[in-house]
Image (cartoon, rainbow, N blue to C red; front, side, top):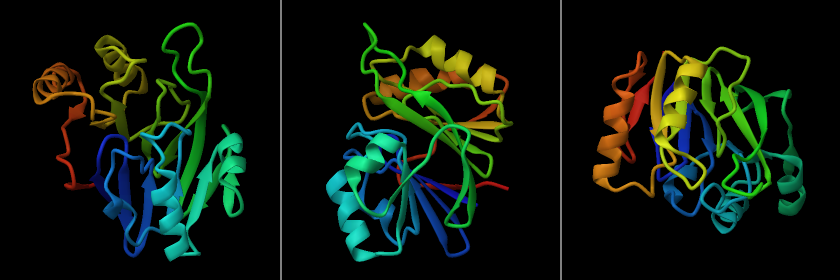
Length: 205
């Protein structure tokens, strides 16, 4: 499987001619959706879903499937499949487990919206959440920045999930110095950690 990192929280997963994209938001590149056969959306914030970009991709490819939580699926309209924690389904030929359920709190219970995570053939994208799933995770996409996150929580999240490897996502708000600081801390952990440059790929086996 090839994993490609796009802007902020967006990743693209490819195997043979199968292409699945998670969280193509307004901070990610349109090319992420090129040739995609399935899209997964963790929640409704625009750094995780660019509605116009997704609509254009669906118009260009009526066979493109979209899965997200029930409230967002209803808002997006026909052709979007609602899924929830505990569900397992197949998208673009990948096996997907749905976990989590709630967005991480910023303050005073906000934003208080649904957020589902996806484990796709062992790769875990948590969206805006630090939910630790019951399933084993080979590859963790660990959030690196956000108003709901501090560095120590990200480190504890990695320790609790205990993956084989980890790559940072949700990092558009970090400067180059901030990225280096985050990477320095995570590189001290007992996990194979590396940053994937924007638009670059890694092969997962």
